[in-house]
Length: 344
Image (cartoon, rainbow, N blue to C red; front, top):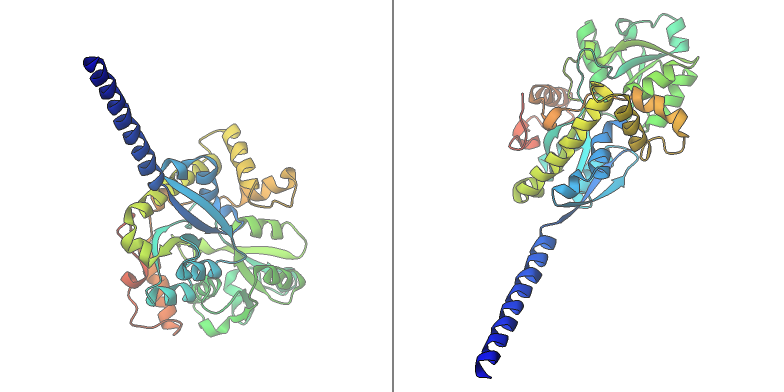
C-alpha cells in the first residue's frame, strides 16, 4: 500500500510540475506579444502596413497591431510624440524635424522613393495656366504653386525645381492651402497654377479636362526619399527588438507589394490579389472596378528592408535650415536613428 501511494504521489507531483510548466509557458508567450498602434493614411503608399497586417506578418513577429487612420501626415507625427501611436509613415517636414529636436521622435527607415523608370511624383499645371504657357516646369517662374503649409514636402519640391531651373526660390508664389483636397479643387478651377503629387492622384487629375501633366519630380530630385517610417524616441532607445520586429514585418509587406505591382514579377493573379487587399483600406467608397486603376497607378517603389537614403534626408535638412524653418544646430543624428536599417 505504501509503495502504491508513493507511486501515485509521484505521478501527481509530475503532472503538477508539467501543468505548471505549461501554464508558465503560456504566460511567457502571452507576455511576448507587443500591442502597438500604427498610424496610416488611406493611400496606396501605405500598402506595406496593410499587407503585413492582412497576411499575418506582424503576428509572426509577436506584434498585435491596431491601424489608426489619419487625414494628413503631420498629425501622425504629433500622435507618436504624444504616445498615442507607435509607428507612422510621413515625408520629412518642418514639424517632424522640430519634434525630433525636442527628443520626441526618430526616423528609423525609408519608405517611398523616386526611382528612374518607375512612375513617381508628377508636376501638374491647371489647364488655364497650361494654355497661357506653363507647359514645362521651367516656366514656373512667377507662377503659383500649391502647398499644404510652409515646411511641407510640397514646399521642398517647389524650391528644388526653382534651384535646378536657375531662378530665385521667391519667384515661385507658394499658396498654403492646408489640405490636399483643397489644393486639388484650386488646381482644377485655375485658382493656382501648379502642384506636385504622387502618381495615383496625378494621373487621375491629368485624365480630366482641367489639369495637365508638365514634368516629373525625379528630374529635379533624383533618388528623393519621399516618405520615411518613424517611431518615438523612447521606442528607438528602449524597445529596439520590438522596433526591429516591426521593420521586419513591414519589409515583408513591402516585398509583396513591390513584386505584385511595381516589378510585376509575381504574376497577374498576385497583382489582382494585391489590389483587392489594398482596396480594403484605400478608395473604400469606390467600387472595386473604379478603384483598381487608381491603386495600380499609385504603385511607387517601397524601399527594400526599409533602406534609407540618408544622403537625400541630409539635403532636405539643409533646405529646411536654409529657409530658417528649423534650427541650424540640428544634425542628422537628431532626426535619424541609423542603427535599424541600411543607409546610403
